[in-house]
Image (cartoon, rainbow, N blue to C red):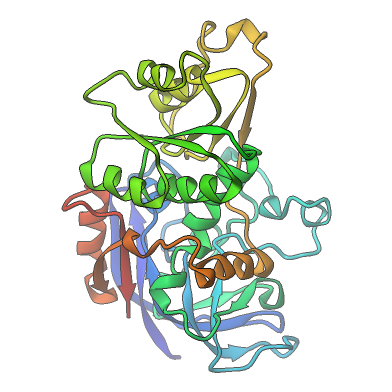
Length: 357
């Protein structure tokens, strides 16, 4: 049986490079040879044991590659074709899909989580930090890469671009809105780009890392706030003449950033939450206006499927959102343990790491 290299979850604190069999595929699947992938903040939650997955699972959910083999029932694609698949891989025929909530396809109660049913790569099936990955329901999830786009140009599409943009979309940003984004990691930076595309005319970014603040300005932030220098909520209120923002996007997943986003809203504003939280949240009475502020709190799991991927790659191809600066480091798959060490400790100004077999 053919074998491949893969990044495997062993136990909390240990993701190691090892060998395992190349995946078998069923009639509706495709085998994709990975040419580029990356590490996500959610993978770090898995590494730390903050999000539970089965031991022995291949990690990773952001695949860029080439079709190696097609299942017998898959049509409309060819072997050797360059493709991506979203981090969320809906079946297209579940109740969740048919009511328009593709990301919750197959949602159950595994490990006590009622959501995230559509997130399979590196969660419920083997992921793509490997030489090969099995893509389920290939005709729903494989999206051909347009000619002229490189692997790195489309590397953000499977997850962080889709997630960041969805933060702006779920917040229902309108032309002329003022938006604040708390935490300018890769997802927050994509939220900035998404807010600009949605029509926000004043975008405020909050972080403390100089490189991230600089990148946020390039992607569309009109103001940046170093939360170590000033109180970010007070500064947001100063910048908005005490009005507050129309939409606050939380892109980290902590009590502090969630609460600050809530306190930054105008009455009737929307908190769009993208962070993955590892502890319980509390909502302070004053920040919640005792429930009388007409505020909306909405959460979003990264939209997937081939149509979502096509649209995102169209944005990249148009040049309207240049996310190339997000890839700050490059590693071979053989060195993925070192890449995890760098990324999980956020050293050397890392934003995203491109991993190539």
